[in-house]
Image (cartoon, rainbow, N blue to C red; front, side, top):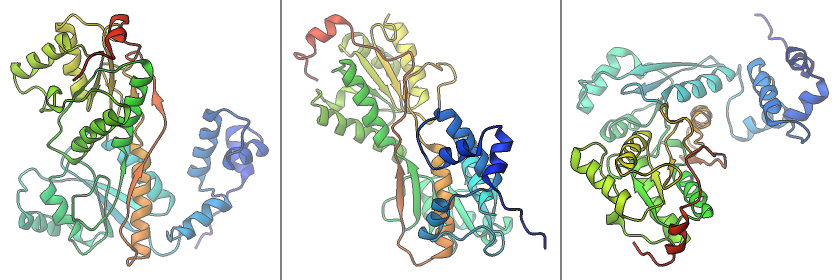
Length: 358
């Protein structure tokens, strides 16, 4: 059996054309270099399989099996279709599992599945029940999630877990992202902020809305839930007309959109109302990725890939220590992409902000 060659700081330095001292500083988190250089060194170290003593101690403390401890394990990410953020999840899972010596496959569930019995029959035929564990991303029907977490094999959800379920889970914290967004708008001087987005069909949507209500209360902003546009977008001309009217007549100086599709409709409504961004109305989105048609959209940076990497660690921890309590992890980030769609409210709106109530 061939013994794996030990990775050294010199190997990382030679690969990048920097000094060993620079590599050491970067991996220890010491100041004195740009974040881009630090990131490049960190990524090279990961690719080569280098671990600092602190990282090795972290694996032991988390009870995550060491690379090479036992046979490579096989896992699958189950999806109902291709979502914009799935590639980030696949990248995060694949990288972390590969670093730890394991294999990931992606599986798209067939559309005809409607019952738990049909799901289990299909999984048995497909050999999925013989894998070492399953990852469940957002977008699966709740009945399917509940059926999958009851299976006698490890399951980690990359999502907010259903109420009453017993499974490890990790998610990028959309509630925190909404609070960050409201803070940004408030600091710019906005006091009349309109929420646009579905608040019913998925747990993440409901949590965005609840976070918006909580942030408004925390900041002392006027708040009347019925005034906001909280139905699924594009449900006919009445929906768009209602949004256009609110923007034209409601005195709002900023709009918080839950998803990129809401940004698209808000942009249409703003144009119909004769309003410009950010001259008349500022706009922030809280979706997982940049808007393809509006790359300058201001938005919080959600840790989608990082959540997938953490999901891989939770999976291996569960396999290594099956009796540990289940965990729900929410990853918070402070990064905010300050694009071209956020600015101060118009002067007349600032003068009226204290006298308008919602």
